[in-house]
Amino acid sequence: MYDTSVHPQNNSETSVPFCVRFFATGFFSGYSKIAPGTAGSIVALLFYAIPFFESPLIITVAIISFFIIGVYTSNRMEKSFGDDPPIVVIDEIVGMWISLAFLPKTLFITSLAFLFFRFFDIFKPPPCRQLEGIKNGWGVMLDDVMAGIYANLTTQFILFSFSNI
Image 1 (cartoon, rainbow, N blue to C red):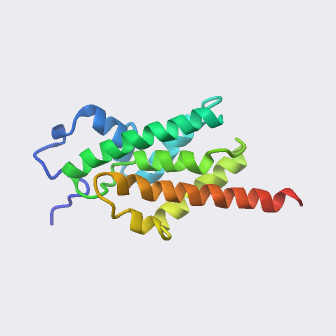
Image 2 (image 1 turned 180 degrees about the vertical axis):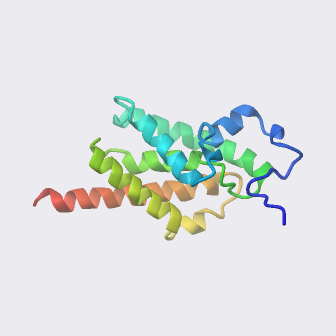
């Protein structure tokens, strides 16, 4: 049986412009043979490690910009690779940044947000799974946005719960 999640449905990968593939695959991290979603999340962490990236203005602009780019590039990739192809990880980048937004930038908190994001992205509690079904690149992005919101709120809750101890 032909696996459309890895191979394009069109003639070749060249049917998708380089820039679209570059961004959609998280700077090609989505081609990782092992856990491409986690690889995309790690790319997000590498950006987050840049000094001042955590500032509310910078991370908000990054989230909005990459979300818009993500909807467009995901839609283009789905036309060649089928629904929500595993190589598309720009959604993980945006979701990971959402999970880190407005939190203190420490190794512990970053690690906690990363673990929660991966958990919610993999298990997709409602409405993540339902959002995935939206067409034209929106579903690819929105389920990870929701997973990022869940991860951020969970991390905030834990920080709040243990701040008075």
